[in-house]
Amino acid sequence: MTPVTSSSKAPIKHLNRRLLVSLAALALLASCGGGGGDAGEQPKLEPQVTLAVTNGLGVSGNVVVTLHINQAPITVENFLAYVAKGYFNGTVFHRHVPGFVIQGGGYAGPLVAGGALPTHKANDAPIALEVGKLSNVKNTLAMARTSAVNSATSEFFINLVDNTSLDTAGGGYAVFGTITSGAEIITAMTTAPCSAWPAFFGFGDLSACLPSPNITITSATKTR
Image (cartoon, rainbow, N blue to C red):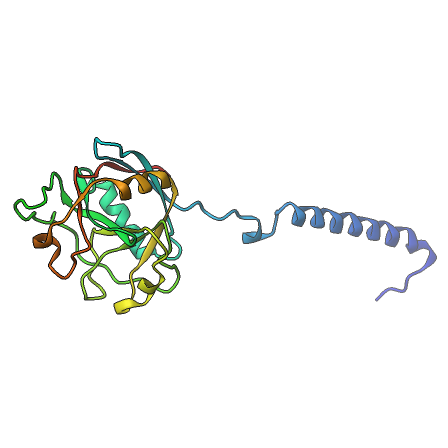
């Protein structure tokens, strides 16, 4: 290495100044997110679906559901696939259990309590159960299913209260969305007229009833 002499002090000082300027520039870039990789990126917005619902008798409006795709990707993609093909349009909330849940997504209206038993709409293949990351608390959406854990298809329910027991009961029920606008519409749905129909719900589910007139999803649209 060449020894530093008096004649080389000025160039050394000049280099140090340039180094300080460079370091300052790097610090400024870092504070602005430049060169910071993922640290400066904003999280992606969760998708939203707007459900337009009505019963023609006091229940009418939009319910916005924010879908938690990071926590329940399989379930959210399944729900969005049904939305994309208009599957939910014209379906009704066919089962209301006061103080528990209100359920829909499987039957086209009109349904009449005591009438002919309805046929479920054709649905896609069942999906895998996703539980453990989200809880069945008030105003969340979760998938309905049979006693088989991996049997959810199109039907979903809205938790009317905190139903945290459903997080684990029978293997659990997959929560995938939260109502972020239109909670007052859900309240109106729960106070709407409702008719018993044991032949449809089963005689072991005597607390369930069919909203009458039907509460219909006139449209389900991805709005974000």
